[in-house]
Image (cartoon, rainbow, N blue to C red; front, side, top):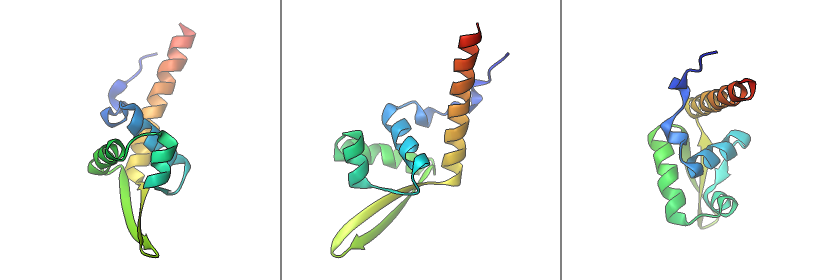
Length: 101
């Protein structure tokens, strides 16, 4: 069985971006502070990875206020969900292939 690696996406090669997309695939939306706490990373580190995913149009940003406090939420786009699924499916094929050899 020949595995096509075309569906592996460089955007998900980074552990933090892979974690972000995993969280957003499992949840409709997630806010910045909750993501930061869950992933145990700094504001700047999280912001740079979110920006990279936003640039690829894999996530969308929703900004609002809760009372007087700003609140930023993130949501995976249809494009992002599709790319993430294809990435995971390719990894799964690779794992299954390795088990059968």
